[in-house]
Length: 196
Image (cartoon, rainbow, N blue to C red; front, side, top):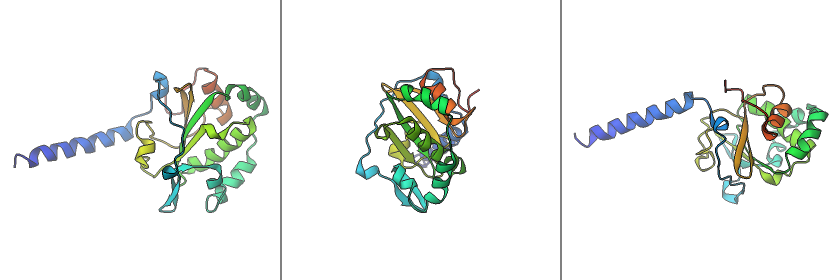
């Protein structure tokens, strides 16, 4: 009995902690914490199909392939980013690395991810500096790519300069995708959609 009671208490505490994490909002960009950003894309972490969705590190080619091209391609082609903002972003994005999270099951990700790639192409961004992680519905898998990044909503695009987080775009824009990203990478005051 003495061994069962501590195990039951530990299980209850772990369950409660998981529920609280889901309910909290992201405040990482407020703290501007320094993080070690690993932008490598090892073969073992490349995206694979799990229950009809991608999970792991994905590339533009993954989204341009069936079954994802049916929603990706039309949205990519239909999006025209603001040329003036693109011009400003070209110089601001040169030394920026990005760690992005999205779900191929998620409507918000399906809306913003094609625009995001179109914007990166318009800016001439070197996509070798982008790690695009596709996650499961819980946003907890693949654990080795999610843990430590405080991902509660997708899409989440995290921008870094010299390993320091500049800020993050979460789920939908405050203004437009390109204006929000310009504010983040140029150091302007910016709060993502779930910050007050």
